[in-house]
Amino acid sequence: MSTERLTTVLIAPHVTEKTSLAMANNNQYAFRVRRDADKTEVKQAVELMFDVKVASVQVVNEPGKTRRFGKTMGRTQDWKKAYVSLAKGQAIDYEAQSRNQGKR
Image (cartoon, rainbow, N blue to C red):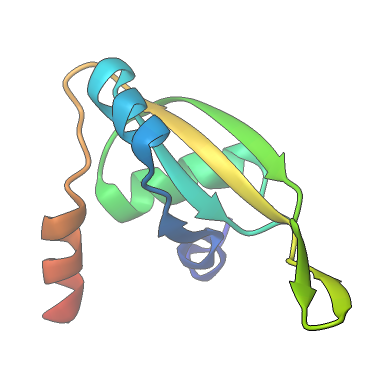
């Protein structure tokens, strides 16, 4: 897998109450990922971007929600979420990662 492709697999960290509990209790992190990404790509991308050892990956397809735009009904785009479990002793520090990318 090319590094160019792997750098585009992860879109953003997905931080909610549920994911922050998973982070604290299970050492599990959630990311928004490309809709065409699979588990192996997500694993390789996280290991490349954050220098950690990934234990497992679960991928969830999230359907878009129905929204109203005035009189007309619309729909938000479907998206994919990945739950990444890290090996014992591993952790991801989002703040340090964003500071390092700003210096490049």
